[in-house]
Length: 128
Ligand SMILES: [Ca+2]
Image (spheres, rainbow, N blue to C red):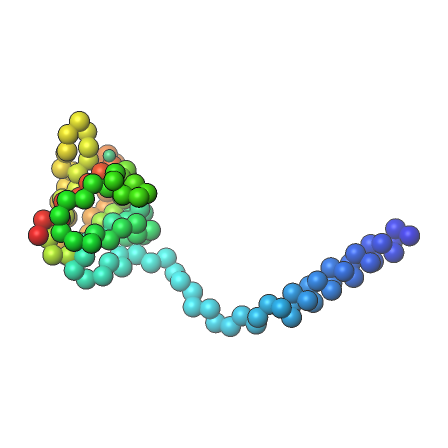
């Protein structure tokens, strides 16, 4: 009796596997998407959640001042790297009882933010 039930369950599982084999499309070459980095379109500045230009979280839409705390969702205290292919130098600011300029990323440069600068930036000023 017990062996019979096991056999029945095994048969059902085999049937499901066969069914799923029919339903599932024969997967062909899926274009793998490797970890992409430093992929900022030209004439923009891009801001990454990760180091080395990974996990892009924002592309600045224009020149000017952007307070990342006002984004939805907020993007402050997240930035770990910056790529500037844009039309102006990008000044990075942290709020600490006032705006403190951490560093400026020149046109054509990338920047890695480490230590006290990592996950600290609250605003950017794109000076063009
Ligand atoms: Ca901050």
